[in-house]
Length: 256
Ligand code: 4FD
Image 1 (tube, helix red, strand yellow):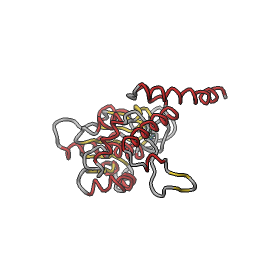
Image 2 (tube, rainbow, N blue to C red):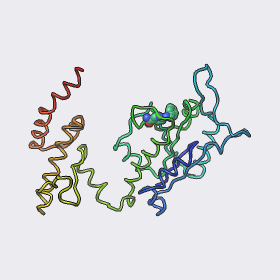
Image 3 (tube, rainbow, N blue to C red):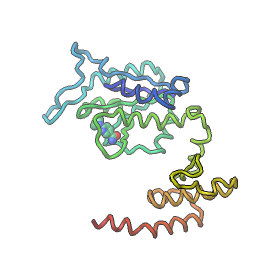
Image 4 (cartoon, rainbow, N blue to C red):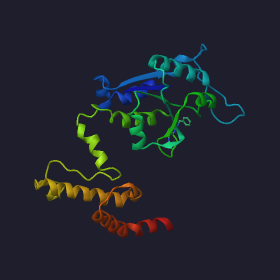
Protein backbone atom coordinates (compact mmCIF):
# COMPACT_ATOMS: atom_id res chain seq x y z
CA UNK A 1 0.00 0.00 0.00
CA UNK A 2 1.23 3.49 -0.91
CA UNK A 3 0.63 6.57 1.25
CA UNK A 4 1.05 10.05 -0.27
CA UNK A 5 0.96 13.11 2.00
CA UNK A 6 0.57 16.69 0.73
CA UNK A 7 1.87 19.11 3.39
CA UNK A 8 3.75 22.33 4.09
CA UNK A 9 5.71 20.49 6.81
CA UNK A 10 7.25 17.41 5.15
CA UNK A 11 9.82 16.89 7.94
CA UNK A 12 7.04 16.51 10.50
CA UNK A 13 5.43 13.68 8.47
CA UNK A 14 8.75 11.95 7.76
CA UNK A 15 9.97 12.24 11.37
CA UNK A 16 6.69 10.85 12.69
CA UNK A 17 6.24 7.95 10.29
CA UNK A 18 9.86 6.88 9.66
CA UNK A 19 10.12 5.90 13.35
CA UNK A 20 9.02 2.67 15.02
CA UNK A 21 6.85 0.08 13.26
CA UNK A 22 5.69 2.26 10.35
CA UNK A 23 9.32 3.24 9.68
CA UNK A 24 10.43 -0.38 9.61
CA UNK A 25 7.55 -1.31 7.26
CA UNK A 26 8.51 1.53 4.88
CA UNK A 27 12.20 0.51 4.92
CA UNK A 28 11.17 -3.12 4.27
CA UNK A 29 9.02 -2.04 1.28
CA UNK A 30 5.79 -3.42 2.76
CA UNK A 31 4.25 0.05 2.52
CA UNK A 32 5.55 3.22 0.88
CA UNK A 33 5.43 6.86 1.95
CA UNK A 34 5.67 9.77 -0.49
CA UNK A 35 5.80 13.17 1.21
CA UNK A 36 5.09 16.12 -1.08
CA UNK A 37 5.93 19.69 -0.09
CA UNK A 38 3.06 21.85 -1.38
CA UNK A 39 5.48 24.81 -1.37
CA UNK A 40 7.44 23.17 -4.22
CA UNK A 41 4.40 23.82 -6.45
CA UNK A 42 4.09 27.60 -6.02
CA UNK A 43 4.36 29.67 -9.20
CA UNK A 44 5.65 32.87 -7.58
CA UNK A 45 9.29 33.61 -6.87
CA UNK A 46 8.68 34.12 -3.12
CA UNK A 47 7.20 30.60 -2.82
CA UNK A 48 4.15 32.09 -1.12
CA UNK A 49 1.35 29.54 -0.53
CA UNK A 50 -1.16 31.65 1.45
CA UNK A 51 -3.23 34.80 1.03
CA UNK A 52 -5.95 36.86 2.76
CA UNK A 53 -9.54 35.56 2.72
CA UNK A 54 -12.05 37.43 0.52
CA UNK A 55 -14.64 39.15 2.70
CA UNK A 56 -12.09 39.75 5.43
CA UNK A 57 -11.54 37.93 8.68
CA UNK A 58 -8.60 36.81 10.72
CA UNK A 59 -5.67 34.86 9.36
CA UNK A 60 -4.55 33.51 6.02
CA UNK A 61 -5.80 30.79 3.67
CA UNK A 62 -3.82 28.25 1.66
CA UNK A 63 -4.31 29.10 -1.99
CA UNK A 64 -5.88 26.65 -4.44
CA UNK A 65 -3.18 26.57 -7.14
CA UNK A 66 -0.19 25.01 -5.31
CA UNK A 67 -2.45 22.45 -3.58
CA UNK A 68 -4.04 21.47 -6.91
CA UNK A 69 -0.72 21.22 -8.73
CA UNK A 70 0.84 19.11 -5.93
CA UNK A 71 -2.18 16.76 -6.10
CA UNK A 72 -1.94 16.58 -9.92
CA UNK A 73 1.75 15.65 -9.71
CA UNK A 74 1.02 12.83 -7.25
CA UNK A 75 -1.84 11.55 -9.40
CA UNK A 76 0.45 11.48 -12.44
CA UNK A 77 3.02 9.45 -10.49
CA UNK A 78 0.37 6.99 -9.27
CA UNK A 79 -0.72 6.82 -12.91
CA UNK A 80 -3.80 4.60 -12.61
CA UNK A 81 -7.11 5.11 -14.44
CA UNK A 82 -9.28 4.90 -11.29
CA UNK A 83 -9.11 8.01 -9.13
CA UNK A 84 -7.29 7.73 -5.80
CA UNK A 85 -9.15 8.77 -2.64
CA UNK A 86 -8.00 12.09 -1.16
CA UNK A 87 -8.40 12.35 2.62
CA UNK A 88 -8.59 15.91 4.00
CA UNK A 89 -7.99 16.21 7.76
CA UNK A 90 -10.40 18.70 9.30
CA UNK A 91 -12.50 19.13 12.46
CA UNK A 92 -15.49 19.29 10.06
CA UNK A 93 -15.03 15.66 9.01
CA UNK A 94 -16.44 12.41 10.31
CA UNK A 95 -14.56 11.26 13.38
CA UNK A 96 -11.99 8.63 12.43
CA UNK A 97 -12.56 5.11 13.75
CA UNK A 98 -11.41 1.50 13.24
CA UNK A 99 -14.17 0.86 10.69
CA UNK A 100 -12.83 3.70 8.48
CA UNK A 101 -9.28 2.37 8.96
CA UNK A 102 -10.39 -1.03 7.60
CA UNK A 103 -12.09 0.63 4.60
CA UNK A 104 -8.98 2.72 3.79
CA UNK A 105 -6.77 -0.38 4.12
CA UNK A 106 -8.52 -1.85 1.03
CA UNK A 107 -7.06 0.92 -1.16
CA UNK A 108 -3.83 0.52 -3.14
CA UNK A 109 -2.99 4.25 -2.80
CA UNK A 110 -4.25 6.95 -0.44
CA UNK A 111 -3.56 10.69 -0.68
CA UNK A 112 -3.69 12.86 2.45
CA UNK A 113 -4.09 16.64 2.34
CA UNK A 114 -2.87 18.54 5.41
CA UNK A 115 -4.15 22.09 5.83
CA UNK A 116 -2.50 24.92 7.75
CA UNK A 117 -3.24 28.57 8.54
CA UNK A 118 -7.00 29.14 8.84
CA UNK A 119 -7.82 26.58 6.15
CA UNK A 120 -7.73 26.03 2.38
CA UNK A 121 -9.55 27.77 -0.49
CA UNK A 122 -12.86 25.88 -0.74
CA UNK A 123 -12.67 25.55 -4.55
CA UNK A 124 -9.70 23.18 -4.55
CA UNK A 125 -11.29 21.10 -1.77
CA UNK A 126 -14.42 20.71 -3.93
CA UNK A 127 -12.31 19.47 -6.83
CA UNK A 128 -9.96 16.98 -5.19
CA UNK A 129 -11.18 15.86 -1.73
CA UNK A 130 -13.16 12.60 -1.54
CA UNK A 131 -13.14 12.03 2.28
CA UNK A 132 -13.12 14.59 5.11
CA UNK A 133 -11.85 12.98 8.30
CA UNK A 134 -11.45 14.40 11.82
CA UNK A 135 -9.20 13.12 14.58
CA UNK A 136 -11.72 14.34 17.16
CA UNK A 137 -13.48 17.44 18.43
CA UNK A 138 -10.52 19.76 18.93
CA UNK A 139 -8.56 22.24 16.81
CA UNK A 140 -4.88 21.83 15.92
CA UNK A 141 -2.40 24.08 14.11
CA UNK A 142 -2.31 21.70 11.15
CA UNK A 143 -3.63 18.46 9.69
CA UNK A 144 -0.24 16.69 9.95
CA UNK A 145 -0.78 14.97 13.31
CA UNK A 146 -4.23 13.62 12.32
CA UNK A 147 -2.80 12.46 8.96
CA UNK A 148 -0.06 10.54 10.78
CA UNK A 149 -2.65 8.97 13.08
CA UNK A 150 -4.72 7.79 10.11
CA UNK A 151 -1.65 6.48 8.21
CA UNK A 152 -0.53 4.58 11.32
CA UNK A 153 -3.96 3.06 11.97
CA UNK A 154 -4.28 1.96 8.31
CA UNK A 155 -0.66 0.79 7.95
CA UNK A 156 -0.89 -1.63 10.87
CA UNK A 157 -3.75 -3.40 9.07
CA UNK A 158 -1.60 -4.04 5.98
CA UNK A 159 -0.39 -7.68 6.02
CA UNK A 160 3.24 -7.92 7.13
CA UNK A 161 3.44 -4.55 8.93
CA UNK A 162 2.98 -6.13 12.36
CA UNK A 163 5.32 -9.12 12.74
CA UNK A 164 2.76 -10.62 15.08
CA UNK A 165 0.27 -11.52 12.33
CA UNK A 166 -2.37 -12.75 14.82
CA UNK A 167 -2.70 -9.49 16.75
CA UNK A 168 -4.54 -7.38 14.13
CA UNK A 169 -6.67 -10.46 13.35
CA UNK A 170 -7.41 -11.12 17.01
CA UNK A 171 -8.91 -7.66 17.46
CA UNK A 172 -11.87 -8.66 15.30
CA UNK A 173 -12.77 -11.34 17.86
CA UNK A 174 -12.73 -8.72 20.61
CA UNK A 175 -14.65 -6.28 18.38
CA UNK A 176 -16.35 -3.43 20.26
CA UNK A 177 -14.77 -4.43 23.59
CA UNK A 178 -11.82 -2.77 25.32
CA UNK A 179 -8.61 -4.74 25.80
CA UNK A 180 -8.10 -6.78 28.99
CA UNK A 181 -5.23 -5.83 31.38
CA UNK A 182 -1.84 -7.43 30.72
CA UNK A 183 1.11 -8.31 32.95
CA UNK A 184 4.77 -9.29 32.48
CA UNK A 185 7.66 -10.02 34.87
CA UNK A 186 8.13 -9.70 37.81
CA UNK A 187 5.29 -11.65 39.45
CA UNK A 188 5.09 -9.02 42.22
CA UNK A 189 5.85 -5.33 41.58
CA UNK A 190 5.30 -2.50 44.12
CA UNK A 191 3.47 -5.11 46.22
CA UNK A 192 1.02 -5.85 43.39
CA UNK A 193 0.78 -9.52 42.36
CA UNK A 194 -0.09 -10.70 38.85
CA UNK A 195 -3.63 -12.20 38.87
CA UNK A 196 -3.03 -15.89 39.79
CA UNK A 197 -5.12 -17.28 36.92
CA UNK A 198 -2.50 -15.95 34.47
CA UNK A 199 0.17 -18.10 36.18
CA UNK A 200 -2.04 -21.21 36.33
CA UNK A 201 -1.20 -22.50 32.85
CA UNK A 202 -4.93 -23.24 32.37
CA UNK A 203 -5.47 -21.72 28.93
CA UNK A 204 -9.30 -21.91 28.93
CA UNK A 205 -9.48 -20.22 32.35
CA UNK A 206 -7.09 -17.51 31.15
CA UNK A 207 -9.29 -16.84 28.10
CA UNK A 208 -12.44 -16.74 30.25
CA UNK A 209 -10.81 -14.28 32.72
CA UNK A 210 -9.58 -12.01 29.91
CA UNK A 211 -12.97 -11.94 28.24
CA UNK A 212 -14.66 -11.03 31.55
CA UNK A 213 -12.08 -8.27 32.15
CA UNK A 214 -12.81 -6.87 28.67
CA UNK A 215 -16.54 -6.81 29.40
CA UNK A 216 -15.99 -5.19 32.84
CA UNK A 217 -13.68 -2.50 31.45
CA UNK A 218 -16.01 -1.72 28.58
CA UNK A 219 -19.02 -1.41 30.92
CA UNK A 220 -17.01 0.83 33.26
CA UNK A 221 -15.28 3.08 30.73
CA UNK A 222 -17.11 2.86 27.38
CA UNK A 223 -20.68 1.66 28.00
CA UNK A 224 -21.61 3.15 24.59
CA UNK A 225 -19.63 0.33 22.90
CA UNK A 226 -21.69 -2.45 24.52
CA UNK A 227 -24.60 -2.01 22.09
CA UNK A 228 -22.43 -3.28 19.22
CA UNK A 229 -20.56 -5.98 21.19
CA UNK A 230 -21.60 -9.61 20.74
CA UNK A 231 -22.16 -10.75 24.34
CA UNK A 232 -23.41 -14.05 25.74
CA UNK A 233 -26.32 -13.98 28.20
CA UNK A 234 -23.83 -14.41 31.08
CA UNK A 235 -21.71 -11.52 29.78
CA UNK A 236 -24.78 -9.30 29.42
CA UNK A 237 -25.60 -9.95 33.08
CA UNK A 238 -22.01 -9.14 34.10
CA UNK A 239 -22.16 -5.87 32.11
CA UNK A 240 -25.55 -5.01 33.65
CA UNK A 241 -24.10 -5.54 37.17
CA UNK A 242 -21.25 -3.12 36.38
CA UNK A 243 -23.62 -0.55 34.87
CA UNK A 244 -25.82 -0.66 38.00
CA UNK A 245 -22.73 -0.21 40.20
CA UNK A 246 -21.40 2.76 38.19
CA UNK A 247 -24.58 4.54 37.10
CA UNK A 248 -24.55 6.74 40.24
CA UNK A 249 -21.19 8.20 39.09
CA UNK A 250 -22.73 9.28 35.81
CA UNK A 251 -25.69 10.81 37.69
CA UNK A 252 -23.32 12.68 40.01
CA UNK A 253 -21.43 14.09 37.01
CA UNK A 254 -24.62 15.14 35.29
CA UNK A 255 -25.89 17.37 38.13
CA UNK A 256 -22.76 19.40 39.00
N1 4FD B 1 -9.61 17.39 14.56
C1 4FD B 1 -8.14 18.52 13.00
C2 4FD B 1 -7.67 18.63 11.71
C3 4FD B 1 -6.99 19.78 11.32
C4 4FD B 1 -6.83 20.81 12.23
C5 4FD B 1 -6.97 22.77 9.77
C6 4FD B 1 -9.07 23.43 8.11
C7 4FD B 1 -8.12 23.33 10.30
C8 4FD B 1 -7.93 19.58 13.86
C9 4FD B 1 -7.93 22.86 7.59
C10 4FD B 1 -9.17 23.67 9.45
C11 4FD B 1 -6.89 22.51 8.43
C12 4FD B 1 -8.87 17.32 13.47
C13 4FD B 1 -5.82 22.39 10.63
N2 4FD B 1 -7.29 20.67 13.48
N3 4FD B 1 -6.23 21.98 11.94
O1 4FD B 1 -8.77 16.29 12.82
